[in-house]
Image (cartoon, rainbow, N blue to C red; front, side, top):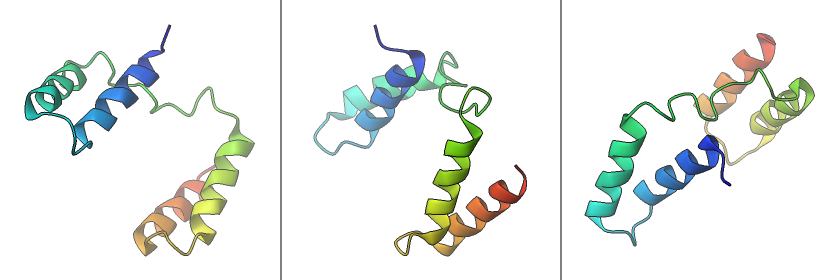
Length: 80
């Protein structure tokens, strides 16, 4: 059975998929706007802090990321 985070991720992917209908995208927007999945995937409380830090460091060192993304990652890393 999928978790709320997986369901929310599926709806987000549907919205960004150019091959899905506008009706399907609207349904996904309504589901996400309902608030049921508001916190899905947004909490770092149950994530391994070392993995989070590693991901932030990877963001900082990835030449394909924007300077804005790198700066945000630096700030989050400093706040840990």
